[in-house]
Amino acid sequence: MSEQDHDYELVAAALQGDAGACSKISNSETTRWLHAVLMKRGASDTEATDLTADLIADCFGAKEGKPPLLEKYNGKGKLRAFLTRAAINRLIDLKRHQKFEGQLPEHLHESSATDEFDLVAGDSDTEPEQDHLVELLRDALLHAFSKCDPLHLVLMRLVVVHGVRQDLVGHLFGWSQSKVSRAINSVMTTIKEETMEEILRNDPWLDLEWDDFLNLCRSSTSFFVGAPKPART
Image 1: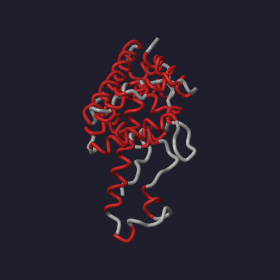
Image 2: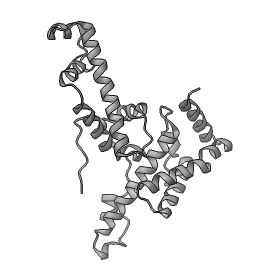
Image 3: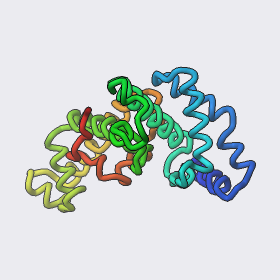
Image 4: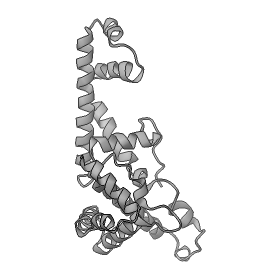
């Protein structure tokens, strides 16, 4: 059984109320890891402790009638990676709140729950585990494309994206079918390796594997190259 399969069964048991499964997910090893991840990303000790505690609590029963966070885990990646991404994005949300609040006029700091602060920087119904990773992953993919042979990229798009047969592509460029196949395999390897290296370079604490990257791309069109970047405020 793969680690992902084991994690998926563990989560399923926890969601059904299995105390042992819940204990394994929320054990001290997990909380220490998440705390360390958040501290490395700039959280204070108090912030890291609070965010970790809230995240673990939300795994089993989210506030305001929302479903448990673990219901969003699909078993296609490691549970630790899923929790790490969730923790990082909650920290990003927190820092955005703090930055925005610091820019408000004094008389707005204690305004009502429907003021500009809540409307602009408050909770939303979007998926927090994915929203704030869009730019990081997209930029890594664009970096990988920049490292590829342009002609090989064209060949890959023709065959993989548009479904043109390799023999027809080879005839168009005067190549054998095997040469076209090698070029496509080469560019796909380059994309994978360069993308993951760039992600690791920009965020060493983001415990992300290639399968996780692909699953995120499949889950949201915002990850596709050419999707508009979120506006900066």
